[in-house]
Length: 202
Image (cartoon, rainbow, N blue to C red):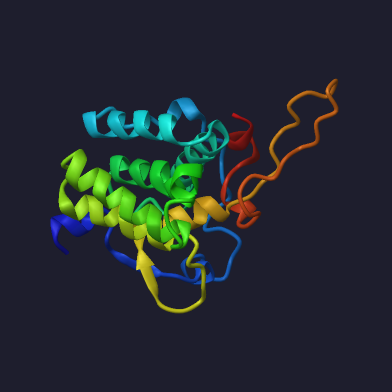
């Protein structure tokens, strides 16, 4: 396996989550994983994309993207620690996976938001921020396919983790009982047994 395949999460994984989970709800029972224990990459590239995403995305979408990063890293650490990729590459994919949904971008094309978003991510990373092309293409591929959920074929490591984290759903704690706000369901509601409830609360 080449260094680029390992570093940037290109290794192929089954697209069907039930295959990688061996037909079980999880590989092992999850334990609490705090935000403080999962460090954000502090590279110049990561900082640039964080700033870009915070500027371009709505607050709700940016917060969703950050949850996808933390949920995904919790899943990686506890369920699939053997999966290889840099935290920077996964963070970039999380921050950019919904870039095609902004008002500006959704009205700029008739393409599906995932495809246009992948094109935007590739251009940003390779042409503007001069990331290694293997990394930029890995992120773009994950963005293209993050809603390509199915039971056949393969997907990259970064792509599979992004899918798991974006379709992951769990009840989030009520914001305020006095305001009578009901608990929300984040993302699409799948694979709730992969992340501990205390991780979500944190």
